[in-house]
Length: 301
Length: 285
Image (cartoon, rainbow over all chains, first blue to last red; front, side):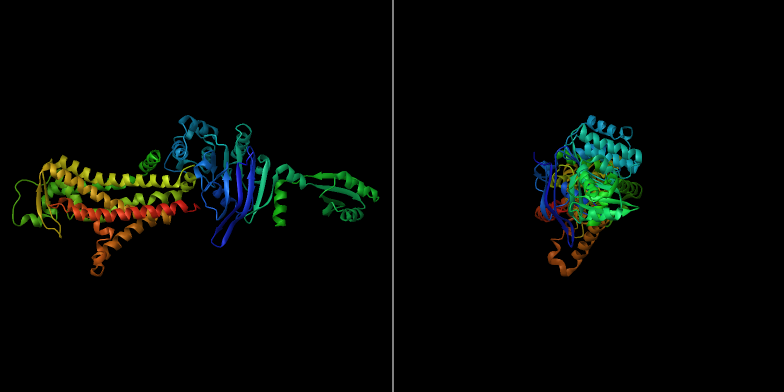
């Protein structure tokens, strides 16, 4: 099956600044895809190129097989997007904003609008002007616009910005529902790694306009798993491990070694130590959080 | 496309600034009416011409005269050169810059909409607004004149370049007024297009309004400098008062056609250059 999002050698240069540098990316149907990276990594520029707001200097991005810049309408027909902080006509009501913004390139009924407003918890304030909405309410209205008409693909940039913890949880649950119950593909750009870890099935980490890591969240975390080894004598254990080609000592403290396995299994590690007469009292797997993985990737960069 | 124009008009209708021009013209008409009602023709610059040579029996002041007064009399100068361009630019200058400033252009262009049709819808909505404003100026003057003085024929004074006094019966007066306002609308759209162009390019509504007005005044000044006389006929500012020619006898159709062509070229050039910029521009705000 063809990927829903396909970016190939995507490049954007703003005069002297290379914002996105030959980025390649593919997102499959049904995924909740997290797009991570530090400020200035090129996330927003990439997202803007994905919806045709910015013209790539080189390369292309295709949605549902259509080039976003050349076949804008076909590419975005089944796409809902919230790019950066949601912007609305402040002098119009929430309902009017959804009606006008969606129907500029689509067709939705009042019933669909009201259902969406109900989902994002704004039905009671639908007729109030947006200028009277709080930041959180505007954020929810932005999410409402992105999911109105039940698109196949939803692109979201920092969707929980400005929301209180309760609102953030509601949005996380909503994104989960979009994928699970409505079979939508969600592309999510966020700084909140905890949030991404909870809801995304796959991620890409970008830095300096390039993808530096991509894969399933669980696979990436498993690959980055380390083991706390309690062994005696610890110095001999460290020397033994350093001689192994498939293991590395990441850190040591208080008679404990933190070991990363690049190929072997924990059982093989245990066997190698015991064969050298080293007493192993504990071998505890330590799964890193996405935050730790992310910080390690950034440090390596 | 028609639905998009409807959305643009709806958005326009919900902004207070859209009504500033209408309110200002009601006020202007009202005070002119009061002045004429209680001060007679003394307040009108045409009195000099009327006092010498012949007398007017009865009152020439009526609905037709009121409509002419704000279009083609010396009183119309400030309206055509200052008020009308300002209020037109207030809306034309906001049309893109406002969307960029509020970030709504980003929201709209994320939707499956052709940039060219979105652009054309904005242009059409602005055009409708400009024609409505010009039409409203004439209609409000006519209705208020009718309410205060009744209807009748039209007594007009000439201009500096074409001194004359003419009397038109009720029906010819009406179609000359319609022609005059249509020509005034062409001028208003041209000034508005300059603000529209700057708005699309500068992303700043104040800059667009100020830039268009500044360009208008600059062109007016250039047009008065003898050295630039050869190009005066090609400056858009030269043709803004062409509505006055609708009351000449005979009507100088060739001059009017040239003025329309000249302004048409300005409008078309500004439209296509703006469209080309808009279709290729990166939306960063």
